[in-house]
Length: 123
Image: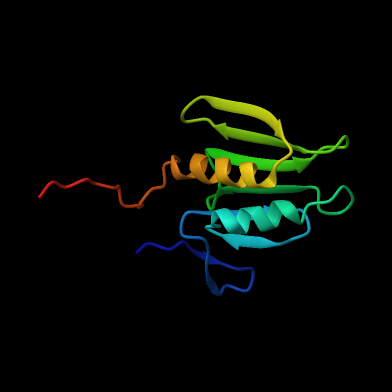
């Protein structure tokens, strides 16, 4: 199993997300978040000091990201961008459950170096 190793400002090795991480404006972070974890992070958003969540690979120059931000008029703006696939989609939604489910499916389709590919075998 592969994990990302980083060096912090004190020169100590730290282990990051295996594939990607979700960070909210208030500083919360979840490595490789599940659908439930995304649901909780999005549910915790508000219109004052925790207005967005960004999900992206743990690398210096990520080629994709997804973000969810609170809209002033209610609901959420969802941005999905993947430069390797020439994708850039901006949508709005009100259901946190739908957003978390859709993001989980979108994230599952991203490319992660070192992630095993799924294979189907016939017996």
